[in-house]
Image 1 (cartoon, rainbow, N blue to C red):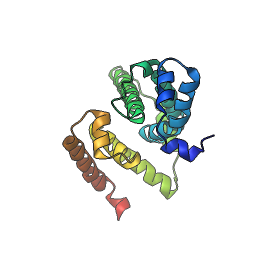
Image 2 (image 1 turned 135 degrees about the vertical axis):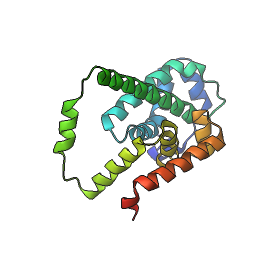
Image 3 (image 1 turned 120 degrees about the vertical axis):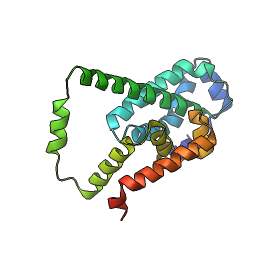
Image 4 (image 1 turned 90 degrees about the vertical axis):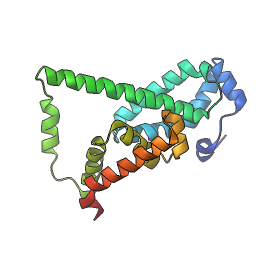
Amino acid sequence: MIARTDLVCSKINEDVLEKAKGGDSEAYEEIFLIYRDRIFSAAYRLCNFDREAALDLTQDVFLKVWEKLPQFDNRSDLYTWIYRIMLNLYLKERRRRWLHEKFLELFGRSNERENQADQSQLGYLERQELKSALVNAMKRLSSKQELVFKLRMLDGMSFAQISEVTGMAEGTVKTHFLRAIKALRKDLKEWLG
């Protein structure tokens, strides 16, 4: 049996990949076991540390992987391909939520329960306050800046990997990253000292 640390670092065996592409559920389960923790961790960060949202996203990702795996053409790394599926699902859900919020705004509705919950949670520990400040500062970034920042800083991707995952030119990725850093430094200057 492969140790968990080996699973994280290993590449998927070509035979296993071909069997999974052919519909073999045991081979697919092996792929799932190799990539599930990495995808959940990335989803957790993309979802602003919301565990339930990250679990939902991870589940949706692997359902989509099962559906689309026969179309995987081996031109990119399997993890990058799965990550791209996660990113697309995340962005689709984010757009859906944004449209829903705009719809509610147009018709004069507000989510008072969320506002009350936010106001009743005064007295955060300093660490929680910093996390909240960072999340809020990241929300003020453009969607591309936020995405590039998260992929680089939270997932440790190289600019080349981010370029491959997002479809942006590498120079554009670097520009978005530098602009995100500059904006975050400005918004978090009280925390940075």
